[in-house]
Length: 304
Image (cartoon, rainbow, N blue to C red):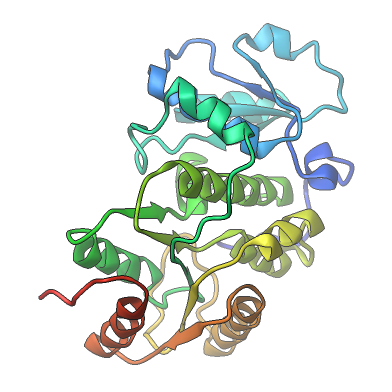
């Protein structure tokens, strides 16, 4: 996330979202007809997003909510984002490209979600690391290699979709907070509903907090508590020993900054997992080390 213009926090300090960590009202776009499976997904996501969420389908109705309520708008197009920015709404870009269909979203899952579930014993792998350390490449590799041998659940990095939908604008503190909130909810949702044999999380809400600290000098304390509640079988922390590649979302070309972020990720990983694996080196060496560890968790073999 580009931090060149982030000198001060631009959102209101008394935002209910920033203080309490949940949205009160979620507004669906008036003119857009969601697919049934998408509606179910939003219902489930809303349950994870909030202690209380009211779903409404009319922008006029949203105007009647008190100013101290946080209104979020599910955005499917850039026009929806523009509308949100001018109507005191928090934009919530929908994962339409990364997760186009939701076969697990059925009516029966709604009751399953609000019923306490036993803690999952399936292996969970978290991938963390600084900019340009090869996280996405690693997750793509795992999907192509292990995905042909077993069912995987891969939780995508939501902030990239968020940033792209918002049109690469400079994100403010509240926008970063809501991206972390959705990241947390998305992880809980996908890991609880999709049948699989291995869970892979491509960056969780802890990274959102670390970036918030870099960009604004602060982070939502409730979001960090969410991050500390997560537990992983294995945490992979990627070393910044790959050359930094420029990207509209990147802002840490200095090696010292990348190494500092790496150490912060490493410290967090040790708090949420008893097994932390630092991946370093170029090319095949990273994959070989990781596949050795994964084979101890599940029955997989390296494929060419």
